[in-house]
Image 1 (cartoon, helix red, strand yellow):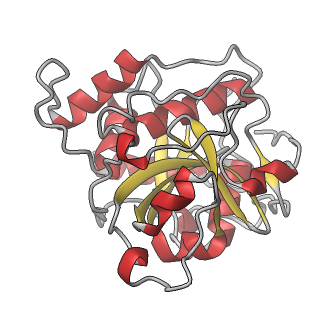
Image 2: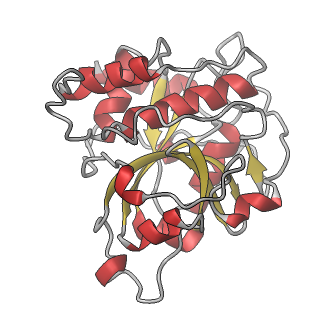
Length: 281
């Protein structure tokens, strides 16, 4: 796969949430989370096992958001705890936009439908709105598809490994992650500030998971941190925040960004991966 050289992250990506125009504050009480505790299945394949020396070195900064010309959309994550499926929808948007195709726009109904299929959520009664486990969503996405889009495979990253994150964004065009948000992130979200570790550290309001678990896709990075899509907007976090609160991360191989011949990215052992996938069936 030829890696497309996109523009580095713009300066305003480091200014917190990038919104279209409305500078008003967000009410965190009207936002939903919904990521269950990370479940690390020992059968989950590891990215480190498939990286070869020819994997391209990621640049110091990289931004996949510039081709997305429409609002990202909440995908109902202001109403229900479907962040795990909304994150999938946002990656589908970004992948297809950067592939030079007509950008796919998963509908709220499609995202909620995937969330219902994974969790048993009833959109009519609201029953079983208890969030989802990321690995369950990834397996459903691979086997059944989300909004008509299937992924080929996913591999787990080392959550605190910056190089893995940069590789995932640069080579695999995104990173599907889970964070255990602290209460301190509420005010930062409300005030359009970057997510950063509070002066009190990871205790009290800075305790991991004290707000809740959240699934988000990483779509840009630079020396200061990463940019994710959440609640219909772009949000930055510092690398230190990433290290403190990210509890799972995955790189995904998807036909939405692979070339027409479905080749794996340069430097990634697809043959070995396919053999291991066959062993899991």
